[in-house]
Amino acid sequence: MTSSNPVALITGAASGIGQALAVAYAEQGVRVIGGYFSGDPHDPGHTEALVEQAGGQCLMQASDVTDSASLDALASAAIAHFGRLDYAVANAGLLRRAPLLEMTDERWNEMLDVDLTGVMRTFRAAARYLPAGGALVAISSIAGGVYGWQDHAHYAAAKAGVPGLCRSLAVELASRGIRCNAVIPGLIETPQSLDAKNSLGPEGLAQAARAIPLGRVGKAREVADLVRFLTSEQASYITGQSLIIDGGLTIRWPE
Image 1 (cartoon, one colour):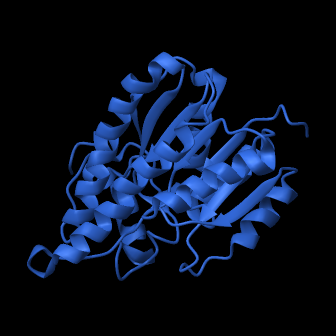
Image 2 (image 1 turned 135 degrees about the horizontal axis):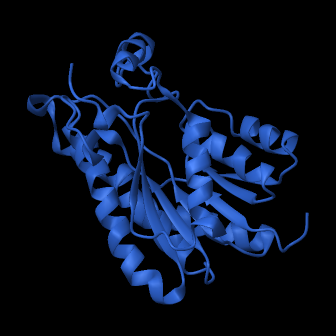
């Protein structure tokens, strides 16, 4: 692998969609600088091992999307280690259940700080290095991006803001040849969605699958493949868009 291979920065790369994306990139020769939150239980070494098995290169570095200096350091590490940075994917996210009457200012602010402002910080850190042809992708959610979700107003509000951020940056960065898009996943099996306390859990996902026209929840790799496409040259005329990947859930007539 030579220095001409593109480099992608991925936050939340130690599990779920971020980990699947790191592997998907490796299979296409894209090198990865992966951010992970040290307070999470996921092993970043597992992502590195999977990338290596796929024939790729990956450097995992602890980062915190609520800390601008931490994300600046992550982007700088891409340049120092790989010599370039071509794509940035804002995937790190927080999910917590909180009914409105139990919603404290602290809970609200924490959610938006991670799931919305964290996207801006990630893109701001990366954008100074991206060349013409570079691309940014943020992971939104069907909750907020399309639907409301009871007991999760703070999460939905943050995720609803992501497409607006991406549309504005698509316009702002177009003169530099940099594209920016959002991906809106539906029900995807990840460690986050399998958390029964804060999300649907295994039983909830199985029940929800019955409402999906394709008859199942999605896989992290399926979302990763969409993100990989959006950062590729094959998507060179797509910018400012919010693409839903949900197995048809949002277009099904209620039964």
